[in-house]
Amino acid sequence: MKFFVDTANIDEIAELHELGFVDGVTTNPSLILKSGRDILEVTKEICDLIPGPVSAEVAATDADEMIAEGRKLAQIADNIAVKVPLTWAGLKTCRTLSSEGQMVNVTLCFSANQALLAAKAGATFISPFIGRLDDINVDGMELIADIRQIYDNYGYETEILAASIRTVNHITESARIGADVVTAPAAVLKKLADHPLTDAGLAAFLSDWAKTGQKIV
Image (cartoon, rainbow, N blue to C red; front, side, top):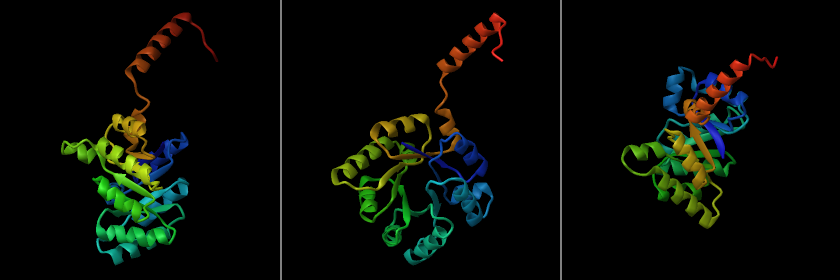
């Protein structure tokens, strides 16, 4: 499974990249706002740091404007994945840009039918939003499973990018089901290493080691 970090914070990306845990980055208008940076400037900086796909989202809602914005974003770097919403205009944009050889990430997916349309439109990635479905008492993991089955049934190459990740359990279940990618905030990715038994075991080892009075170096 590939890990994308969902942020526009360069420091967060750089820290995880050093550990080899970042295969790509996803951004959106909300994350750009939070960063306080110019979208073109910060996206270029991310692309220079991370060789994998970097999703940059269009802001328009009209197809012609989306296509123009997508082409502008694509000029930032070769590893840009233009991010478009799962609307008819977004699907038209996806079809146009993907036919030009551009990576496209179709976002705000909440149903298997939507995911099917995105695959047929040539999407590189489909981003089903797990956490937002959970918020309305719908099991987001069932959507991941449905998309996986449909894509496997027909050999679609669109990668399932599990998004709106809130917990480490979301990541575990996405991996079990077979999502190709998860994108999560840096804080959630870091929590993958946490376990209370690890902490307790380390504390016991350190206590016993101190009693030996020894040093390795």
